[in-house]
Image (cartoon, rainbow, N blue to C red; front, side, top):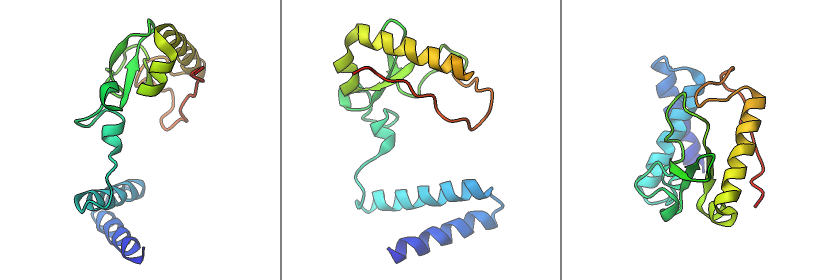
Length: 139
């Protein structure tokens, strides 16, 4: 554990000395540790794949997908265009449990919650860094 702490501190200092913002220094240092652990096969999970951004994402391979107001699959979670209508993301398991009508109802609830919080379009947050808007799936 001490080795990881030392490595994290050294990577943080490296980025800090390059003039990177403190918050980003933390992110970059953690990302470096993650990369080292994956490369040495000490960590086998990859959140990019889990959320559908990696090579093995999507509901057919266990990732998350975006769904539209009619309950239809729109693609991988996080793959929507800026300014488009808000599409809610669901895991493969939840999507299967809800069915098409349940997914459509969930998207409507999620869009209503987003509208109430002031974020009706993807990328259109009124304030940066605001907390995510949660909505019950009903499953």
